[in-house]
Structures are given as structure tokens and as C-alpha cells.
Length: 294
Image (cartoon, rainbow, N blue to C red; front, side, top):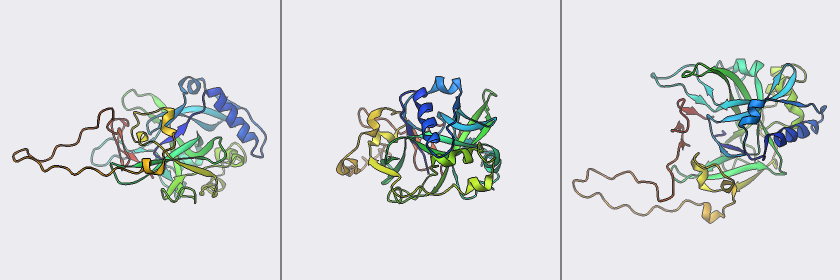
């Protein structure tokens, strides 16, 4: 799965240059990337990107690579029990080509989500410990994604949305989580986008596999990542193992007679309540409905 990721490249022009350089080095001809001015205007370095965020994605437009803004999370077509639409941040790679929710996008609207790392968690609910996975040799990750246009139910505007494909964890990620985003080699990006060799869905599906061992390095980082209210470089500071371990909760005193039971604990001074439920729901930070991560 992929519930949060990072892209800390300092400015948009540097991101475009890095993408062009990496794709040109992947064996194919170096092609320029058409950069959407709206994506440039909204770009800033991010250290805690969560579902419902606007993020630049690479897609094919008129046979060219284009970097355009998109909102993270497909909106499900069917709500359950009258609830709002589910926000689909991830899609399992196995079956995405044929499942009704994703098959149209898989056939015609594949995209690449640039990042320089992603987070996964260990530990019990309430004491989750984040690990930041990033390229072992530095540079960018190219996460395989799908795009779809969607109409905002409040404004009626149509925007582009994306979801990130996930696969079985590689040897690098498996000690922390059993799934990971699909990472594309530079030489496979044009095939995935449909820029090279046409929109061959069968060949594109063959790219959906775990990354080779040694692709990623792991770093235990600040539990401040657990709240989407935090988005700053200090989130990536490495923690010693003992600092990353959850603290044992102090024994609670029994409720006083007539008190009606224990009260919910308030956040400690200077802290924040989490805005995103890592166990499977969206909090205030994801206004468009429940969030599904796969």
C-alpha cells in the first residue's frame, strides 16, 4: 500500500529536469516533458503527501509526455449504505486491468507519480512507527498510477484524479509491510504511459512487479508523520531505534464513582490529533469520503 509519500525536489523546473534526465538515461531517446503551468504554479516541496492532495503526475497527451496536476484518490462509483464516495488512494496491481473501477483507466489513462520516498508503518494503533523508504542511490521514484477525470460534487468542476498501483512487497519493504507501490524503471516509463509502442495493456501489465532487492533504503523517522498537519523537512530526520519504539503507556486510574467512565485522552501539550486514520478511514484531512488503501 501507499498512504503517504514525499517529493522534496526544491522547485518545479528542477523536477522536470530530473525527470527528463532520468528518462533519457533509461535507454530511450530523451524527450522533453510538456509542463502544465497549473502544475508549476501549485508545486512546492512536500514531506507528507496524503490522499486528497494535488500532485503533479506524468501522463501521455497527444503522443507526448506531459506533467499535469491531479488529485490523489479515485472517487468510487458506488457508495455503501448511503455514505459518501470512498476515496481510492491505491489499487491492487493484480486485477486492475480487468476490474470495473479501474479497467478503463488501465487501458487508456495510465500515469506515473513522481516521488522521492514513501512511508510505511509498524506497531500498534495509537503508537504507529513510520519508516521512510527512498531510492538507495538517491534521485526519484516513478510510481505506476492510473488517472480518471471526475466531477466535483460541490462545484461541478471536472478535475483529474489518480490512484497508485500496489504490488507485493520487495525484500527491502517486507520487514515493515506486505505491500508496496509499483516502481517503474526509467526505460519502462514510455511503455507504461503508452508513448512508446502504443497503449499495449498486456505489455504494461507485465511491468507490475515488486522492485528488485537493493532498490530502496529504509529510515525510521519522526512519528510526527502520523499527522498530515505536519509537512516539513524535520519529518525525515532519522530516529535511533530506541527513540522510534513506542513508549509504554502509564497505568490509568480507575474512574471515580459516578464519573460515568473514563474520558478520552487529550493530546499532550504541543501535539496534534491525527487527521488521517492509518487503520482505514479518512479524517478531516480527506473531506470527500472514506479512504481505501490497498
